[in-house]
Amino acid sequence: MEQDIYYLVGQNIKKQRKLKGLTQLQLANKSYFSYEFIRKIESKSACRNTFSLDTVDKIAKALDVDVRLLFEPLDE
Image (cartoon, rainbow, N blue to C red; front, side):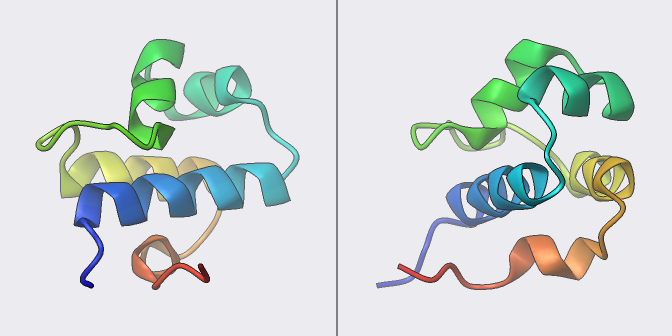
């Protein structure tokens, strides 16, 4: 089954954030997004059109990771 792209990216953001030892609030501050927005992106029930490629790029920069890493398949 193909994974929803928003779910995939959201879960990869969560994974990378945790690997970096950051809280959602810390990531929000580093990326200049609100805590609520980061929480929504990472939630499994994130609605479609929650975020754009520009948003993903800004979060990748805040995490100091290659943006392509956020599009990798999940190990489930």
